[in-house]
Image (tube, rainbow, N blue to C red):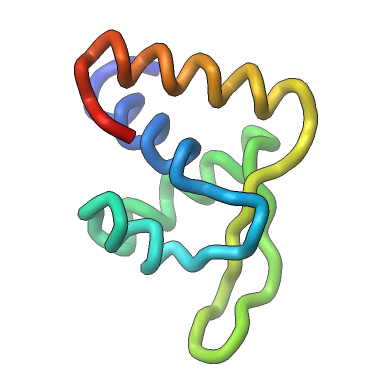
Length: 89
């Protein structure tokens, strides 16, 4: 995926950690609207790169990085894309 959507997806993938994070927190960190962050996170879940679970407190859903070699490969590709475009994670 290229263009603005690909860059956003790469940045969100690299912003995820193994611990649960809300779409709001990731959106805030990356200066994305909540709905955009949520859509990207949902796409990452469907691609098997992220996992979703119940949130804590006021957070409805908690997203975290999935595990496996495909995730490491996707992260390497995301870093390369951002580096090639001169965009920080």
